Length: 249
Length: 165
View (cartoon, each protein chain N blue to C red):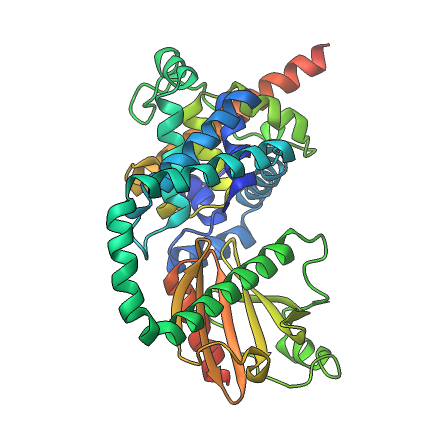
């Protein structure tokens, strides 16, 4: 039997959406109330079963190819309707374009890099072994990278924050090894990539906040290392985890 | 194409038909491409594209039929679900039988099915679900709670049938 005052809150708590103070109170209550604890276990089971059951349909590769082709065909059609303004625009662009050529190239490189990082992040989450070192302890995860990557870094203290460290793995970008750390906030997983700056020569060193394929991305440079934080968590969460990592710097 | 597999899975769950789901996904990408200028950078892309897919579904033949035969709004007094007694016997899913859950999910009205899928399978936050379904956060919570209860009732019904068989 679930205690009346918690019935409504239990699902919100398990969805990770209950405000921190209430979540603490409920978590305290669950420790001492077998009825609520059993109910919360059954709801967690329901969530897991639904997660497994929900991933049911996979698209046919032929369908993917068909849709890609049809979308590609649409783009020139749009351009043909807009050829005149496009031509005028192109001429204007030609005149000023040269000035911004370098800037654009840099931005393109950055976009390509972000897409690649988004791919790495998704590939990690899709993997059955997302991390090679499984530990919430930063003093286990950091030393694990010794001898595997040609640099070292500091990990933040996560006590009293909504973030937990899931683990880490070695990742590669532009044929250079780097570290990928997985953090969790509520149900979202965030990848933090750390690479040597010289492996990313063509990319701007400015601090940026942007998005790639709907993922939020934060990036900055520190001490010869380039940091990228990527995930589907909210911008605020990404800012928070970025600040924690910078503070650990 | 971002979110292709996930949108397809969601579309199949909405339509119960692979061909219709394919049409829906294609329509979604065409609309997204056409209306990309209406997407505001900094807002949630995922919620935006799911909203396009859902609106396309609601105006499709199957979506209109579902709207005609099922209540599209179940957040008010109208939701008459059997009362659940939280006894140890009623604790859901002693074994995580995902096939049973799949069947139960199929039986739910679209309005319950979609909110459960967005929360549990797409792992959207309440805020993202609110943006996708264009409903307030409070409604997301109450709708989710009803949907979960409905799913439990459905699973129990099926477990009952299974036990009798």
